Image (cartoon, rainbow, N blue to C red; front, side, top):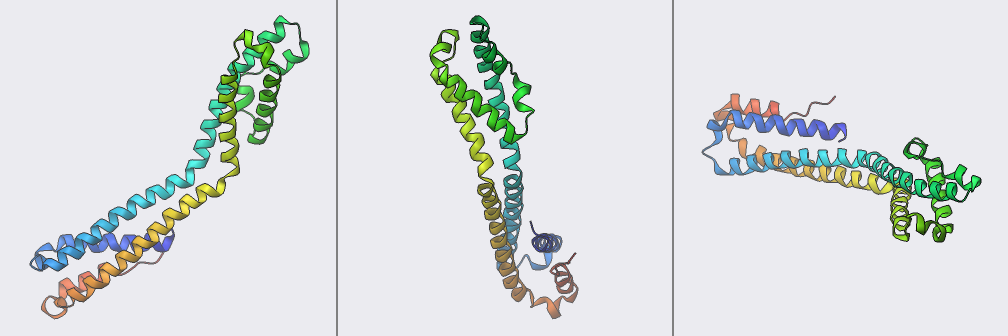
Length: 213
């Protein structure tokens, strides 16, 4: 949330709290209750939208790490199959290439991880006919390919998640606007207390003030 939105949200909350504390003053006027309840609903929606916005902003990093972890686990298993074939056939070059484990993948920077993983998938694909007898199936390769594509997509789509965050931000902006309009209507109704109950009215006006940081 932007600071101006936080300030407005806090004002909404202060106003709602003040109205709750002075229910006895306005409870005989049904329309006041309608607008007051509408304000409370808007406050609840703003809190939900703010949580969604925060989730959208941090989702990319968490998702990318999880996909990377999944791929590293899968590649650890596939490399063991490749290593078994290399040892059985005395292929020292292939053995050197296949001596990897989970950490060998997961600890790499994302760019190096992507390069290494793709190279190993392509290598296993070339050797698939030889590796079938050792337990590697085309379905296993397809599975890790899909995970790899997911990883690449996430690295190439930062804007998709920023859009999600922006949508949440826009949603908050709409809610703030709705809250302002609701309070504008409430302001007009509560003017009747300006003379009949100045203490209540002045307190309401104080609650309605937006404090700027």
